[in-house]
Length: 144
Image (cartoon, rainbow, N blue to C red; front, side, top):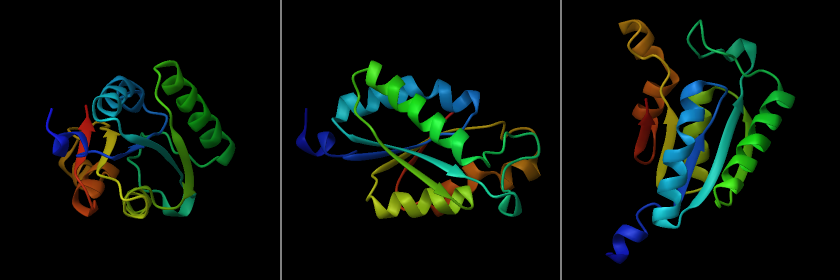
């Protein structure tokens, strides 16, 4: 394999929340990280009520304890797959925070689950996923 391909995704940022789509993305993320021998950073954002950015029916992650538990569970799940992870917990507006962290850690790829972008056109335009795609400092892989 070409050396450039192996270094293509040195650092992968996996933004996780409590959604089914994020859980389903774990296998894909593990595969990418193993294939490219990448550093995997798990990020979850504690969202303050006043900065609520998610769709109305989305689970809002406003508890630092719930986010810490989610990150710990994800770290253990990746460990079972033979993948080491680092975890970052931040608070703020999810789309901006995800992009800021990607920039801080020099991520080469952001991976995130997609939550029902097809529900309404307005929902798709205002979604966290869409904002990350538009603001990201690196490629974004969306897992449906």
